[in-house]
Image 1: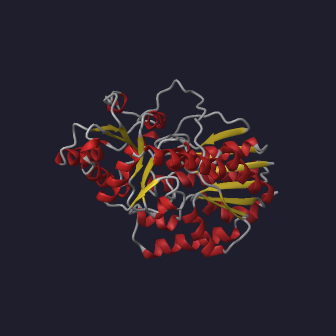
Image 2: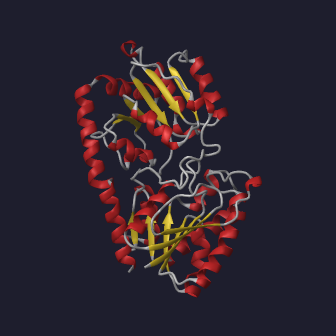
Image 3: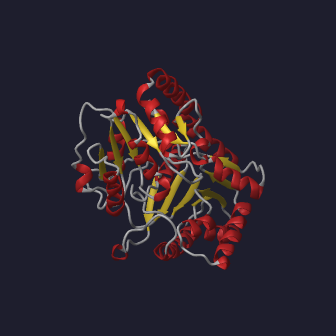
Length: 394
């Protein structure tokens, strides 16, 4: 079986976080599928046995590709379309695996080139237009909505990555057997072709030289510092911790320079600078190392529906997790596996205090968390989901 995978991402670049594309491609190739992977020019080369990585030109002078819709992505996707046509003319593929917006032009070519189409849906594209403030035009949003609905119906397989997105698809195509929920739940190291090369723009001097106080309990947050991540709730909750936790240190990993300055100033206003450490943005490998040092890991997100990718690794870590009780979290987390709290400072502080001091409860929750991960989200579970999808296709 031969497939064309189209990934409109800087592949592979941890800043662009296309981990789901990497793992999906890796496991699919392990099932014996020969893959051509077409992607942007930006990113590092990686080694995936059975996969040939093809790139459009990298226009470095145009800047880095950012997450979400943009004029730059529209330009690059046009080049992806042209290259896709040439590949389809020269090769016979059993199926085309289109990630995100690539499904729009693949859907148009499906009947002409007679391939089966897999739509790997990481989000609702019409919703992205408003979530990332790309446009407020009702005409454009309506056009994207019609295109997305059409692609959902004409695709031979639809993959969603979390229950919230799966529910959205169910509303449009019903409980269709072609729909597979395959969570982005594995987190193996990426096999870079040139691991000795530094990843330009991925790290900062500050993150590599951060000084973490030793022999003190450590609360760790890793991720972006966008407003919806609830860093303000986390800082306020940290301020409210009982005096018995006065020696605890809060480490916040990630964020642009402007975002770090914003929250460092907030920490200063709360009188927390002597107990808060900010690293700034760094590579994914660095975030993993910081998480491994944690006594408690936190996810204080205040809004959103898609499951954060990091939750699965946190479930498997054996470290207690404190998270907000919002649907973004609770579609995976329960009170049995995590310390859940409403997204308010006082409630989050109480959950933090329990995670820091109640050793029996910590053991019970982390044990259940590991069992949940192994049962539903482990490498074996992930492989089984991909295998069932491929069997359905063939």
